[in-house]
Image (cartoon, rainbow, N blue to C red; front, side, top):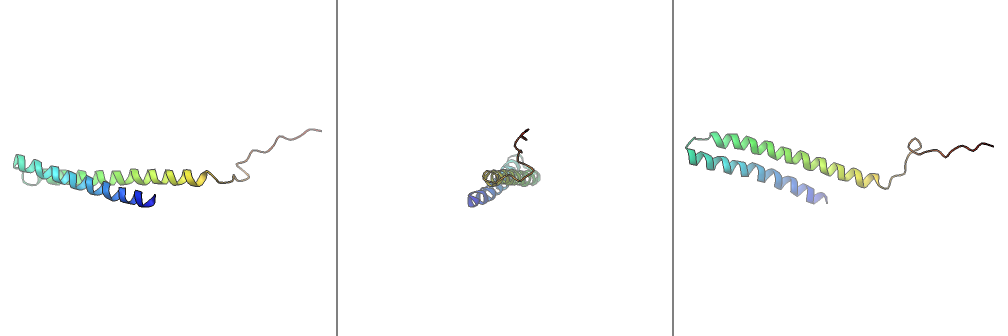
Length: 87
């Protein structure tokens, strides 16, 4: 499972950065604007890559918490005490 998360982090970063870089180069060629769109979309791609990284890590940490908490025995403060008997 960890390998799947690690590979999805890498793929998400690469696709976001290079996809935006390619789109910026395409727009620069179409409009003849030098490197304006390339730089803008490269920065957007980097930001999108880190956003994807954040959400994947957040999802992974939630998955880890749910698997480790399922079988834990509750501590004394978390357990409800039985009702006291009056005699």
